[in-house]
Image (tube, rainbow, N blue to C red):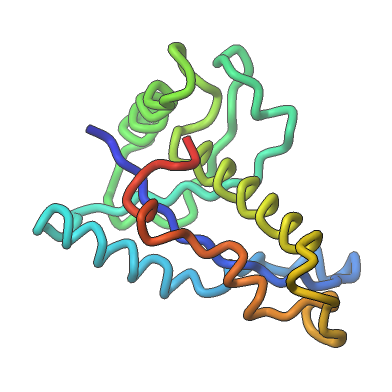
Length: 169
């Protein structure tokens, strides 16, 4: 059985000049804590520590999300402590393209990256619902585009009963 657990955090946007875009790195806020929480969940459910961690970073455009493998994807290895050969990493990536539960054929990106995209879209919907929730009242000005960061974090928080399910699939 294949199970993907997720962690969601609201990422603040920042305005960058064209010069900054050339030399900047995109930082995923609170990544260390999210990974730590996922490793703890993994250990609790398996009683093993992972021997390898593979991290696929999204960033694909809408056009690349079409199902099928007729269009090749490009991957770049940023760091490899696993000492994979190019063929081993390519085979793993290819196999992960066949594990997506919504489709009976392969998809163009590895299932974990696809699921991460689904979770991000779902979290955005929760934030849109939060914007239209009359019980919350008006936004607090001066905070993250006029939004209260604590309220945003609460809006994307996953209910305890669904934390160990693939609700997003």
